Structure formats: structure tokens, C-alpha cells
Image (cartoon, rainbow, N blue to C red; front, side, top):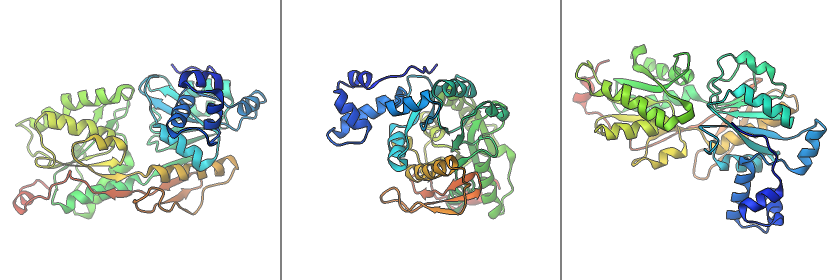
Length: 380
């Protein structure tokens, strides 16, 4: 369970083998500290909930301006949100922000209530799935909340989302253009048995409809996965449930392609498929969603819909400022080209509380163009 003990500059200096002056300069963005030491100091401070003295005084007065980026982790030793998210958000927004780890094994609402009572934050930023079935429980929390890339965010709460429907349509269309018709969707399963990423599934349906292909609910395969130990659990679920299905002689028509609805599942799935002797893309083409750095560890690049990290961070910074000032989201936010060499992106307000960031398709080596004979031989 995450703790709420407050650390000081002296604690950080001792842990990072640096002087208190160096720690102060690093935390305040002043020169005189090497990039490597600065990154180490910021990472340690953020992981251990460091609160600057000025913020501590505000908290004692009940007037905190500090924002907490809630870091859902497998356990208190895992890193969760990459350190660069924290550093980039601070650089873009200029706001006082720290990450705070809450393990998936712990109830999210209980963790937020404890943090609220101890720190009196100005806002919570929650990244990724919440895992709270009864969204009315969020009403117990007085601190303003914003949800980022949360498939199960409560309605009417401020949120920054990705263009899930459009992105899923794009990656599905890339398979259809390569001649694939027998396509399976692979995703995570909620605790209530329903699949995650309903908007991405909707995008898959729309792409099929555009090609004149009826949607078969059986084409969506949702795996039971423990988010508290994602990599291990997803690998086990794939080996136990999916591989036997794909290798069974009783399967009437094997899929020629997978649409995998998040890159973390794509990472474990492609490895498990390879271990089972199923070659990508020779025997099975694969597309994914997210564009996260974890896919860089795969032996070949995977075709994916990219959620641009820097663009999302810029959109969140703007959304936070609007929310704290009591202003609704409206219009289009041009984010330019936040990542060198990548397409320009934008964010559009689809409601006074919802901001959607547009991504882009990143080509990869995970799709094979089917021959005319293979195309004709598929089940449609």
C-alpha cells in the first residue's frame, strides 16, 4: 500500500548522493545540475511524493495548489507512468505536480480519500482504467478530478480522451485493404465480464460496415487479466485460452488477422504467438492501438494507431487550467507538431467536459498482403 510520509530535500539528497543545493536546483529547474542527476532527482522526488515547502505551507492552510498524477501500478515497487510523463507535464503546464502510486490491488477510491485527507490537493489526474464499478463512489471525493485515457471514466467528469473510434477504424481498414476479412478483436475483460475499449470495438464495427461485412459478436475475444500483474497474467490468459483456440482442428475458420486493442496486450500476445510457432505476419497479421514505447521491444515493428504522448500532455495541461478556473472545454486546440518528425495533432472539445486528442497511423511490418486466392478463401 502506498504511504503518505513526507520526504524532505535532505532525504532526496541522501538517496541520490547529491548536495541539497543540487537537489534544490534540479527541482526548481535551475542550471548547474547535469541532465542525468536532474532526471534521477526528479524521478525519486516524484515516486516518493515530495512536496515543496511552499506547497506544504499551503496544505497546512488548506489552500494547496498541488496536483497529483495518480499512478496506477502493479505494486509499490513498479514504476507505472513513465518518469518522462511527469517531467514533460511539469515543463508544459508549469504546475506543481507529483505522481502518487496506488497499486491495482488497492481500491482506487479509498486511496484517493486517504491522499485527499493527508495532502488537500488542488486536483487529481487519473491516467488509464479506473477499475471502479460503482462510479457514484467518486462523489465521496471533494477534490476536483480529471480522467486521462480512461476507458471507464465516470460520466460528466472532466476527461481527456483519445480518438478511439477513429483510430480503431483506421487500423481495421489497414487490414481490410490488405485483403483480410476474417479478423478477430483481442482485448481485456472487465470484472463484470464485458470487454474493455467499447469505443474501439465500435470503430472496428464501423470499418467492417464500410466494407459490407457483417459484425459477428464472436469475433471479439476478451481475456480475463489481472491488472495488478499485467504482463504475467495476460501471458497466462493467452496461453490458456487463445493459443488452444487458434491451434485447434475444430476451429472452423481461423482468423488471418488480429486487431489488438492495446499495445501492452499486443506485446504479450505477439510473444506468446511466436512461442507457439505462429509467425507474424506470415501466418497471422496484427495491428494494435496506442503507439507506446513497449512495442519497441518487439522483434519487428507493429502497425498501430498512435496516441501522441506530448500532444496528450499539452491537452491535459490546457484542460487542467480550464477546469481549475471553472471554464468549460470548447472549440479546437491546435497542438502543432509536439513530437519531432511526427504529424501535427489537435484536440477537439466534444462536450464542455470532454477533450479528444487525435492520433495517427504508424506503419509497421506486422501486416501481410493476402493473395487473391487467400482472399477468396476466407469466411466473410
